[in-house]
Length: 580
Image 1 (cartoon, rainbow, N blue to C red):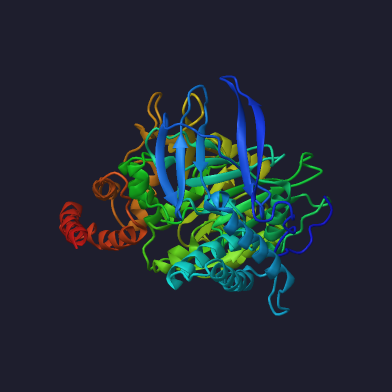
Image 2: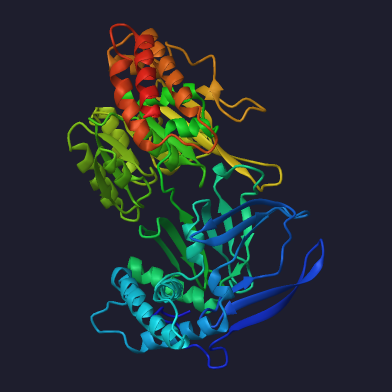
């Protein structure tokens, strides 16, 4: 593979024999259902192919557009995956427009001003858009000797300049997938020119959509190398045969990217992209999605309000960070929060925009001292809630030592890998070196899981277990407060969940209430969460609405008249707000 050079405006000159046209290829394929030939095409300025083999309307389960690009999702018989079929307009341009774009690419590449920083997407892309529009406008004007409406030429110039930007300073056809709000994950597997790009759709897309889909896009090796070069120089991370894995957060794309190259990936480059949700999930939205019950939502609010220590556990992609972000919105705006992360995944900027006082600290898990120092500093920053993106290193010992000594003045929230409460305990003790005695500082473990359909094409995220950690001498006992019964997807309360359980008694003490009063307030809160979750299909409780509602309920539920009176006041307030 060698070293990846600095990003160029164009990876290769447009071959003379293809300039002004498109390239096509026919690929014989064998499928258990039938043998056929795949008809693929690409414009002269791209090395990525789009399969344009017709697929009938039979089995179509969704149709929409992304930035004007038509998208169809089709479920075909005898296939466990769906087909994500999109039709980029640049793959259907007439020869005249293709020729103009090919010439514009060469003109721009030959005359890049010295002051334009090729490594900075912020300066490169605006320059290319402006320069491309000038070049394209001049050529279009020459193509219409009789004179066309200048507004039509200007509109066509904008359209072609946007395409040129996408393929020179951007990520090519993959940009369309990045912009699709229904897509959660994008996978480009080696060899990329022979393997269709795969996508995973969001679990809340609804309908009969198969969430695991194969697209009709095949990314050429040259295009993928150019994309990798762009990622490398935007992030400043090393990538070579000596360092064949590049993992980076791409804030501009709103995604986390992992690139693997030779010698680890012997058939070429592979890329995995995990997109972050544009909007933060709220507890009522998770209730509406079936991830947890209103009572469990209210219990997690009580844990936050009652300064409990909560670990959110699960496997990769189980929704740990999503649930953690929703729990952070249960804090009152008056609560100061310190966030510690290795990789920025918690929606800190959005929470700050909502009015939260959040201090964000970055550290490296590869440097144990960095992680421990960051945690020690956060513990000295006054009465603050502490949120840890992932508990997985040497800092775990410092965290538990501090919690046992009472240094953490408010709630402590974090995520940890583990498929069960017992798995979390084993990981903390065996892998992280935390004694069981110290682990007893954890109050609650919330386990999220992926519930897959029998054929593996669809999945949902559910809270499957909520466990209380009880101190038993030098050991701990794990007692389920909520558990998913066989045949039931969502965790339900167990007989152990009562006003007298350890968690409720701790919450009541923190709030200055009796355990029975704390339970009454929590159940009333569950009623409010249920009402916020009951919306028309497709409508989700916004983060702004949730924060405003929490601020109102923080006062109303603790009125001398009792929580029921406060709920009635909240209903009147919420109803007037909804009508407004």
